[in-house]
Length: 215
Figure 1 (tube, rainbow, N blue to C red):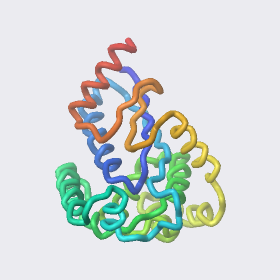
Figure 2 (cartoon, rainbow, N blue to C red):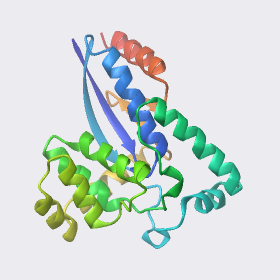
Figure 3 (cartoon, rainbow, N blue to C red):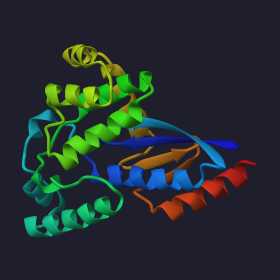
Figure 4 (cartoon, rainbow, N blue to C red):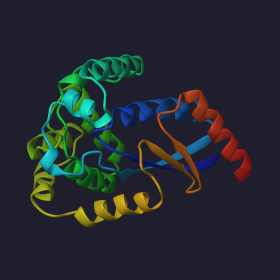
């Protein structure tokens, strides 16, 4: 059985990142007897300016993309349907606000040391898209940590400090310098780039081709 390393560059505030990982999970399940997958999450901020934090999502997206709110609502509705088919909770996707996710990324780095980075990422996706919660609020972040069995007092201490700040900044800079400008981005075996939330069958084919080439 060969090992496949997947470095995932993503943001908690990116719906396609949640969809992309759910599709990746299906591909990994199909290939579980052929390959061992090792996942590492990396930080990206869609809303890096905390000053822009807290704006209702539909007008914010309409302005960003030069579209109407109705167009963005329809676009989001399509994503909600895709998410539902994948078993994701996007019920309050259109009720959320823009959020700065830097502190959330710090907690993902901490969770990685506990072997729970993927669980933390999924808890944050659920809080933001399923519950429209403020994922820049320390108390919401602490609750996400608690929901996956991590120590809430330790999470609170981390958020009150500058722990993991340098690690997240270096992470972001590394992938920006590598040319990653949109997410999700999947770097396979530190060599191949798969951009966007690809369908499971596309990922399965790509992984098999990569494994054959490596062999």
